[in-house]
Image (cartoon, rainbow, N blue to C red):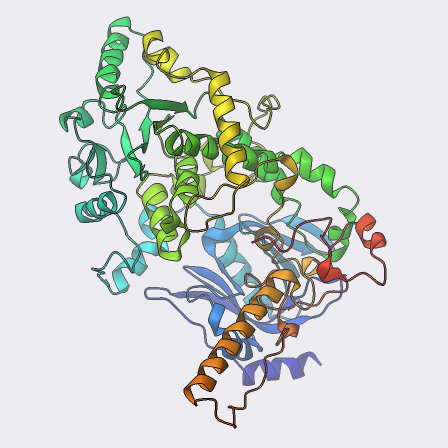
Amino acid sequence: EIHTNEKEVTEKEVTLHLLPGEQLLCEASTVLKYVQEDSCQHGVYGRLVCTDFKIAFLGDDESALDNDETQFKNKVVGENDITLHCVDQIYGVFDEKKKTLFGQLKKYPEKLIIHCKDLRVFQFCLRYTKEEEVKRIVSGIIHHTQAPKLLKRLFLFSYATAAQNNTVTDPKNHTIMFDTLKDWCWELERTKGNMKYKAVSVNEGYKVCERLPAYFVVPTPLPEENVQRFQGHGIPIWCWSCHNGSALLKMSALPKEQDDGILQIQKSFLDGVYKTIHRPPYEIVKTEDLSSNFLSLQEIQTAYSKFKQLFLIDNSTEFWDTDIKWFSLLESSSWLDIIRRCLKKAIEITECMEAQNMNVLLLEENASDLCCLISSLVQMMMDPHCRTRIGFQSLIQKEWVMGGHCFLDRCNHLRQNDKEEHQRQLSLPLTQSKSSPKRGFFREETDHLIKNLLGKRISKLINSSDELQDNFREFYDSWHGKPTDYHGLLLPHIEGPEIKVWAQRYLRWIPEAQILGGGRVATMSKLLEMMEEVQSLQEKIDERHHSQQAPQAEAPCLLRNSARLSSLFPFALLQRHSSKPVLPTSGWKALGDEDDLAKREDEFVDLGDV
C-alpha cells in the first residue's frame, strides 16, 4: 500500500513555487501529513521541503485545490506552507512520547509536530521516509527555525535584491508606504491636518534617530531643531486628524534623570513643546500615559501565552479534554479582558476627539508598542478609509512599520536567546508579574503625566475624572442608541459578555470547530452571491424588453460547494474531516433533534461574528 501511494505521489508531483531570491535547502519524500482526527492515521502523502523562507508540504491533491479556490488563494504562502518566522515550537515523537526538539539530535523522531505562531498545528509522519532524508529535513528545519541568525541572512534581503521594484504613483488605489515626504503630505491633506501640522525631513537618512521614520509629521509651530535635542524623545508626533480639527498624537518619554538641573531643563523643554498643541481655549490636549496607568507588555505576553494554549491542539482527544473547563481556562487567561480594556481606552480617546474636540497625546517609553495599538484602534473606529483593504494596509504601514514597532525583537526573528525579550519559552511568562486590579467597565484612569511632568497648573485645565467618566458613558450609550452608519464612526460593544473569542481567527485550523455547510457567515455569503445573480438576470431581462424568452440560467444553490465550506469561511475554506462540531458538553446535550443548529446562538463562541 505504501509503495502504491509513493508511486502516485511521483506521478502527481507538485511543483514547488519559489519567490524571487528563495532557495531550496533540503527535502524529504514519502512524508505523511496527518489529519487531526481522533488518533486515526489518515493523511496525505507528499514531499516536505525547507527553503530559506518557508517549510512547505507538497501533497498529491494540491493541483485540485489550485483550480478550485483561486478567489481566496494567498499568493505568497499556501495552506500547507509555514514561513520560518511563523514556527513557534517543534516537537518530535519517539516511541509515542512527545519531546521538544532543539540543537543537534542523536536520534531522529518518527513523527514531527510543528506549532505555529498563527495557531496552526502540523503533524508529519516520517516512518516511511528514508533515514538520510529524515536526518536532512529534521536537522534543516531545526537549524533554520531556531538557530541564531545574522540580520543580513534574513530572507527579506534576498527577496528585496531579486524582486522587481514596482513603483506606485497613485496613492488612492495603492497602499501608502510612508517612506517619502510626499506620502505624509498626502495623508495630511486627506485628513485635513495640513492646516496645523507639517511633514519634516529632519531625520532623513536616520541621522537623528533610528527609532523614528525618515519622514514624519509634527505641529507647525514646533521648531525642527527641537527634534534633534533629545534624539526625537519628548516630541509630539502626529498620527491622525479628525474632521473637527482635533488630532491624535504620540510622544516617547524623555530619559529618566536624577540630576535636578537636568530635570528642570527637561521640564522647561516639555513645557515649551506642550504649548504647541495646548493653546486654550482654541486647542486643549488630554494626555494618556500608557506606560504607567495602562496595560504592561508583561501582562499582555502572559495572558496571550495562556490563551493560545487553548488552541494549539494536537488531536481530537486533547480538544475534548478541555471541553468541561473551557470557560474557566478562557477567563483565567485574562486575554478577553485585555481586549476589552484596549477597546475601552480607544473609545475614551475617540470620545475626547469626536465629542469634546480635544487633542489627545499618547505617551509611552518608546511610543512603539501600545501607542501603535491604541492609535490604530482609534483610527479604525473614526476613519472609514482605514476600514478598507488599502486603507487598513496603509494604517499598518504608518503606525506599526514606520511607527518603529520592534518586530525584530518582539517576534524574535534573529533567535537571540540571551536577551529577555527574545526568550523562546513563549508558553510561559518570563517573570512573575503582579496582577493588575480588576477594573470596572467605565472607570477613568488618572492622568499621571500632567501631574508629574507639567505641574499642577496644567492639570487644572483638564476635566475631572468623574466628569470625563460621565461624558464617556453618555457618548457611548448615545452612539449605540442610534442606527449604525457604516461609513462613519463605529464603536464596538465593550460590556463583558460582548467580548467573545474571534472564532474565525483562533479556531480556523481546528477541524472540530467547523460546522459542515458553512454556518451563518458562509450562508450570508451565498445569499449575497444569489442576490447579485438575481440582479444580473433582471438586467438581462430588461435589456430584452420583456421578451417572451427570458435567459435560462441555473439558479444558484444557497450552499453551493457546501462540502468545501465551513463556519470559518472565508478564512478557512476547506472542510476538514470532523466527527462533530465544537460545542461544550452542556451545549451539545441541550440541542434537541428539532432545533436547527444554524439558527441557534452557539454557547461556545459566536461563529457568525467576523
